[in-house]
Image (cartoon, rainbow, N blue to C red; front, side, top):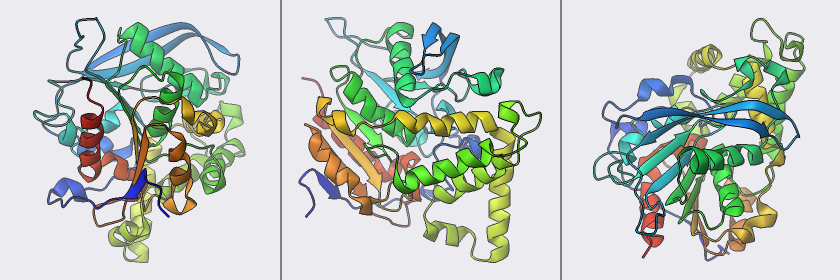
Length: 374
């Protein structure tokens, strides 16, 4: 039986060429910048520094820098409460610029679209260890504080409240790791947002195959003799295996077969992908980013979530496969929670479908409508 708050849905018909564009895994920057929409609205970049940030490990960083992008202008109601701020969170080894592409910003941020920057104040941070925020590769390398997802969410909260002076969020949404952070936001700050929309994530501890592929990457780097406890002069060879695993997990086998129907083409596609990855990835950053999920386990606290929550997953997602039944089971513990699994089709591209907004934006419209303040 399918739970009353859990259902599969049909995908809207899409004729746009954007729907067929190759999609990188959420947690890889890679070639995403080449797909930037020509007409997405200009972002305003910024940096917020938190002094003496204490991590859950007990380590302290004298200056934690959080880079971010914003679109639009903040509005407040008559009581001074922010009423149009939207927090959008990226995936592992990605950054805020992953969303500046035709498939995402081009579908959501433009005039008359669901997250029209003329109506909303959009906040896109680079998380700890990612993008232009503080990360191991800056200079500390293997001596960078070991962070977890709770640390990342705390830093996001301080950016929003202390840095941007936002005291309420219209919506928190995120993809992959950002989706996992969305569950944590609902638990840690239950009265702070009107709605939550996690994409391509599960509200449970990292385990099973999801833990195995992460351990493969972690072990490939940590056991590489060239890693030298993070003090390498050139990127260790283990980073190549890491990139190959990330590629493997990022799409469904049907799309992989379409893009590489022969042995030679499969080798060429993989080599191209890995070559691009090795120009942008850093072994310490990847290692820390994968290890950060060690403290993620929202399941015991799902009952704390007060805001309406709509979780969207994808049937062809190798990282969060629906046959596990985890989302169906756990969503019943969220007071105002519902879950949707989008069936596999010619428009879906496995885990990376979370950035193809045309596939799921009807559900964003639904949660925005249902959670609209009176």
